[in-house]
Image: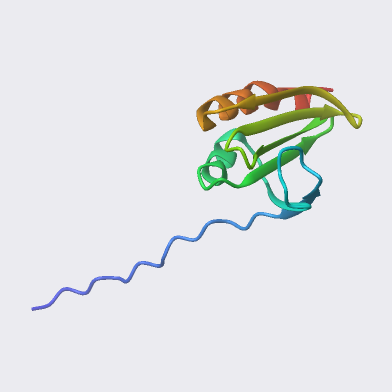
Length: 108
């Protein structure tokens, strides 16, 4: 007697919007695609692939990207002004920076 096994559907990642960012420092390409993320943990899956990530809230925006030199660049902006900008050699350090600045986007 054979038992029936249900076929599992392949896992699908939820769709993310992308933005075209122009003129990022440290990147030779004129335009770079960045993924809109909803949390730092969401960002890590794209950062591991070397992709740029961005997010915005009522009180600011963050962008994290990998430059042509292999360093991770991070920028926090509020009202079109750069508040903090850093470079890191390790992705983990860039992700930690993102986690620290994330709440600043949501402040009233």
